[in-house]
Image (cartoon, rainbow, N blue to C red):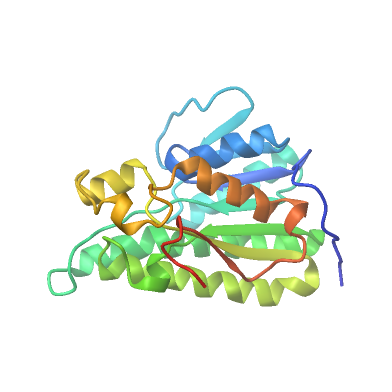
Length: 247
């Protein structure tokens, strides 16, 4: 069994692949990881993104298994390995259960669930073979409290993500492969703004710490769970919600 003792929170020389990296939490995570010394490959569905010096951007449709093979094989060919996988690609809807359609459920699950299954399924045996790897999925407080402003399809999809990552954590632990979950509360991103039409519940009344989160708040949690500082943590969800969810 590979044993990795806890250390500092730097990522010097590690190769990190981030999905949903063109905006919001994914973009902030790419920048924080770069500053921590990682070689960062950020991906998203859009064709051309300039994320600044030191970040390698590649187009990636996480719902496609063929595209998953193309991207991951290409990164390993170029960099030799992938040490860290951060899964930030996501989509959301607030439609009620009665009004939801099959197409909406399919779309939400395609991005939020298959978008986790595809890259983890591809990388899991590779990371086991190399004896180390950290996988981190962006879940949600919605998987714990039934949702803040989202509908049931999103809540169900994020609940599936939480369960999937815990399975990977149990299966991967003897091989040095970690899997954890970020569980953000409301974060000031374009996705949140589109969900609430910029008219969500007042942060002062719903968030004990008095504000919504920023992408950087979540990115710092991602850095902790993907760095040597968390080398005795796997199968957990880190609640970053300003106190909206307290265990």
